[in-house]
Image 1 (cartoon, helix red, strand yellow):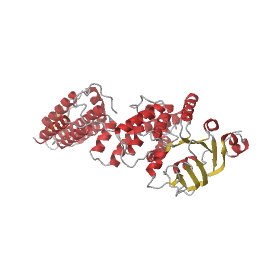
Image 2 (image 1 turned 90 degrees about the vertical axis):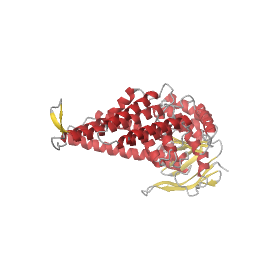
Image 3 (image 1 turned 60 degrees about the vertical axis):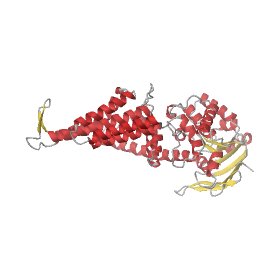
Image 4 (image 1 turned 30 degrees about the horizontal axis):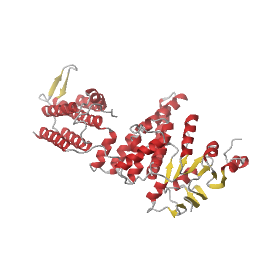
Length: 235
Length: 249
C-alpha cells in the first residue's frame, strides 16, 4: 500500500477556473518524487490537498485511508508541508516557539516538546538559535528552520514547495545536501530541473492541472521535447 | 518593542500573569482618577516609579516610549488653547504664552495627559520586563478570548514584515521617479496602500494554511513562560491594593 495516493483529483477555484484535472500518482516509503511544472500548473494547489487544507473528497489517501476530519491530526503529522516562502511558514516570535508549534498542537508534554525541538534544530544545523526571532534570520536559515518545523513532527512524507527558491548557490547546495540526508519520503514541487535530477528518483510533470508525464527522473529529464512542450526548458 | 532585561530581580521575574493583573488594575485606577487629583496622580506615579526601580527598568527605556504620547499632547494642547474661559473665576494667566486660558480646561487636559503618560509608562515597564511572547502567553492564560490574543499576536509579529514590504514599495516607486503633481502622487500612494492590503490578505491566507498544516485549532500554543509563586501573588496583591486605595482615598 502506498504511503500517499492521489486518485483522479479534481479541483476548481471558487472563481470557476479549473486548477486540477484528474491528477493521479502515488508515493511509497523512501521515494523522492519531483513534481515539475511551469508557473500556474497547479503544483501549490495540489500540495494543499495533501494534508487536508483543501478538501479532497476521498481522492487523497494516506496509508490507504481517505483524509477525513477524524484523522486530520494524524494526517498532518504524517504529511509535513514546507511552504515556498518561509515568512509564511514561520509566524511565531522565536525559532523555538515556531518549531514547538506543531508538537504543542498535538498535545505533547513540555519535556518531550523541548527534546523534539532540540533534535529537529540539531538535524537542520540550527541549534543555538532557539531564542532568535525568525524574521531576523537569513533566507537560508529561515528555510532550515521551516524544515525543522515539519521534521519535529516525525513526518513520514515531506512535501516541499520550491525548496531552493531565493537561496544563493552555496545556500542551495547546503540545503540540497540536507534534504538528501533525510530518510523520509519526499515530494518536491519545483521547476528547478537540476534540483529534481539530483534529489529525485521519480518525476511527475503537471501542466494546466493535469499529469502529462511521470516516470523515472533520468528518463523524463532527458526528454527535451517533453520539457520544452510544458515550459520546463528555455531552449 | 522590548529589550532583553539584564539583571534579575523579584519584581522583574514575577509571573507574567501577576504583572498583567497589576497592569490592568493600575491603568484602570489611573483612568478613573478625577480631574485635577494631582496628589493622587503623584502617588500613583511614585508607586510606578518605585516598582520600576525594583524591577530595574531603565528610565531611558520608559521615557523613550513616552514619545508615543505626542499626538495626545498635541490634541490636549490644542483643546486647552481653544476652550473658552467660562468666567473670571475660571481664567488662568499662563506666563510664557501671555494668554488667559480656562483653568477648568487646563486641569481636564492636564489630567488626560497625566493619565495617558502613567498608563503608557506602566505598559512599557511590563513589556520591558516580560517580552512580547510572554505577554501573549499570559493573556491566553488569563482567559482573554483566543481570537483576540491571536489577532494581537499576529499583528505585532507581522508588523516588521509589512513595514519592510512598504519600504521596498516606496524604494521601487522612487527609483522610477515620483510624479510631479500632488494629486498624481496621492493616486500612486493610494494604489500602493491598496496593493499592500491585497498582499497582506493573501499572506494571511498563506499563513493560515501554514498554521492549519501544523495542527492549529484556534489556541496559540506556547510553552509555559513562568510559574506563579506565593511571593508573586503577595506582590501583585499589594500593588493592586495600593493602586485602588490611592484612587478611592
